Length: 229
Image: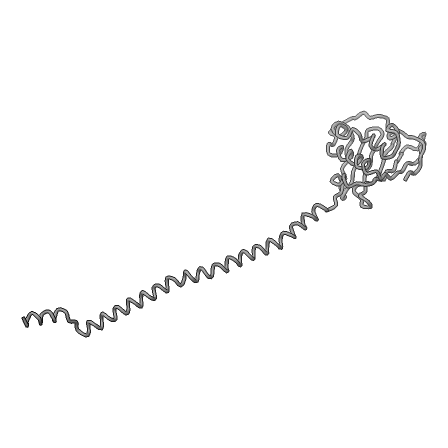
């Protein structure tokens, strides 16, 4: 019995070195487990807290940029829409036209000077539009062209938007009709034949309406009126 009891005590007892090793192992595992949990949770918390300000800061920056660019874009579009045009792009802006008749033949024809400023915007824009229609469909005629009697009558003038000059023109009314329009330093011209005549069939009538004379008087020397302002 005593031998058996001694054997049991020997199998269950641990030496001081074993006890110290076991305690140290437990403490080390506890420490490692604690450090591991902090290390794993700390980046998650830090990432969550740092990403939110970054996102809100980015959104605020983009919102500020959008807010600052919106007035600039609207201002640019408004200025582009309000930008004054010249030439055929400004037909709808024309408010007046001055017209002067020029007769190159002196004898045997005698005709009074004719000069007029027309302020009826409807008549002005109709004439301006006929010039542009003819020029946008220039005549392709080549070689010898038969024309009506040429009395050397032509008209020069300027289209205005208020006091701003939009375009100057020359209209050769007798013989083979010819139109020339100058705007922004560029000149376009065509004979009013073929496609140009088809595109602007009311050119002579609209010129007569602007001047307040009969249509037939546009291409023929007619005695009479001086300046009519």
